[in-house]
Amino acid sequence: MSQALRVTVWNENRHEQKNPKVKEVYPDGIHSAIAGFLQEAGMIAGTATLDDPEHGLTDEVLAATDVLVWWGHLAHGEVQDDIVSKVRQRVLDGMGLIVLHSGHHSKIFKVLMGTSCDLKWREADEKERLWVVAPGHPIAEGIGEYIELPQEEMYGEHFDIPVPDELVFTSWFEGGEVFRSGCAYTRGSGKVFYFRPGHETYPTYHNPAIQRVIVNAVKWARPVRRERPFYGNAKPLEQIGGK
Image (cartoon, rainbow, N blue to C red; front, side, top):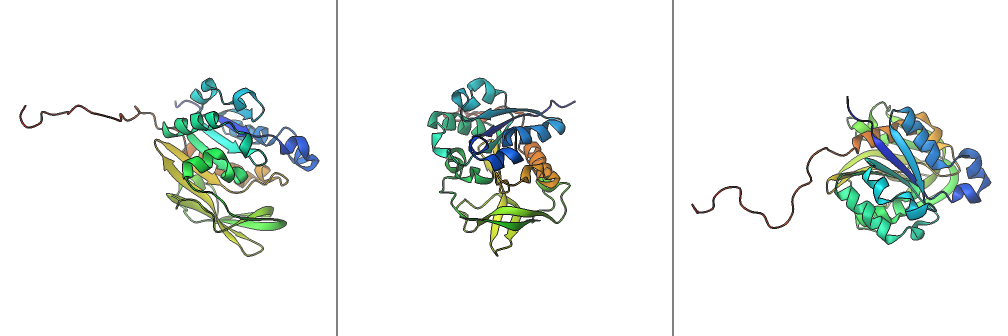
């Protein structure tokens, strides 16, 4: 029997404190809502927030995390650089990372992508249709041809990211824009998935199809159990030149 996946859901948890509408949609915080459906899927899911000591991402927490889920927006600049460096190294060593919605501007996503990760945006209560463009991908398991959200914030191209290793979803918005909304990458020994939906004033993370995608993404991003590759000067495995 395989060990249950250990997931940490990180959220800056600022909108919930400042905006009554967000508090109404996510009374216990976005992080608790996400951790809740991950637990229902059989995972061991804990939470961490920006104002916790070390942002809740201590060495012990990171060492015990198979996949880290990240939601941030208002306070990207408040995330300490040393914590970002630790998270980056854990990803390179094999920990999975799921970056949600406005986490595209998080320090950790930008350092792993190496670009500005900038985009167009608009808040106009418009419909979003996320088309599955990789129907055979495990992150799309159980999803139909598309997911339709009645109201979401628009993100539009050009999205300044490296070309995804795999593109799983492409969004169309009522106002006419399109967006690469499900982008999968490998960084070192770790897997990274960016998933666009999740504006804080909409009940997006209560949508069963969105929940299914995130559950699938966490399973996809789980670490491969193997020894970390050796780097640096290496002794030959065979004799060289008959010596």
